[in-house]
Image (cartoon, rainbow, N blue to C red; front, side, top):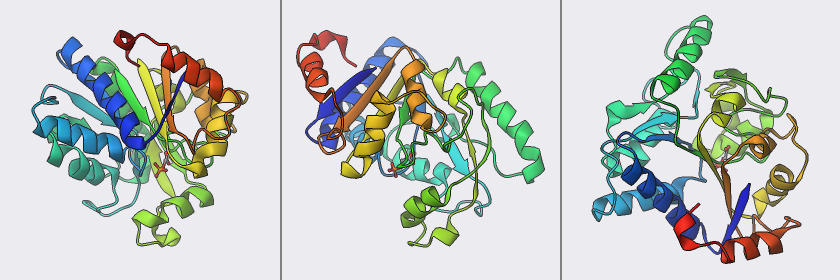
Amino acid sequence: MEVVIVDRPGDGAALVAGAIAALVALRDAPVLGLATGGTPQPVYDRLADDCSAGRLSLAGASAFLLDEYVGLPAGHPASYRQVIEREVVARTDLRSEAVHAPDVAGEERELPAACARYDDAIDAAGGVDLQLLGVGSDGHIGFNEPGSSLGSRTRLKTLTARTRADNARFFDGDPEAVPHHVVTQGIGTILAARHLVLLAWGDGKAEIVARLVEGPVSASVPASALQLHHHVTVIVDEPAASRLERAGYYRETWASKPAWQGI
Ligand code: PGA
């Protein structure tokens, strides 16, 4: 696991945009895994800048979202499909038809079949090349809350009260307006991507970053499952890195890394 400590989230976003540009140069039809929440926003801002300046094109890319709320009215502004339409599709040349989100439109009892189809669609696209991830303050990735099976596939999950409180800011500050249920890629689904890039900003994430990077692998900290993957980049700012015991080593390693290697 590579840990990169940056001065500002914008510096981390530049690294991710560079990795996406390298992927676009390498593959005809790159597959991106997109996350939502506040954390990836600097990356989406940077991708928008790079596309409008003609430095990057996502026209040949496709994308799969990590998760989606269940039970929101179609087109609700907080639905993750809408967030990605607004923050990525409207601001880059990524095609709306090339963006896939878990299908939550049917009856709840139809969801298991829709979840299986979503995993199949990821496989049929050749798998995700680069998966962006945030981390919840409780250690979730996607919406895999503590206790999630480390081998899980896309499925229905129930949010913890803590996550609903954390996400109330996207629902006019009302935790009761945050749905209880979501569909999320499983931890096993996420681990099948070829490159995982987890981002975390601010001291509110310092403790969970230390646990996911340096603590034991445990379903109690779903993000710790990243320790099992062969290509993981954790990009954090100084406040989010403040509880890492080996921060000095991570800085030394990054400072001496040949520039051509990228992340
Ligand atoms: P945040 O959420 O980016 O809004 O902090 C992270 C997450 O829940 O994965």
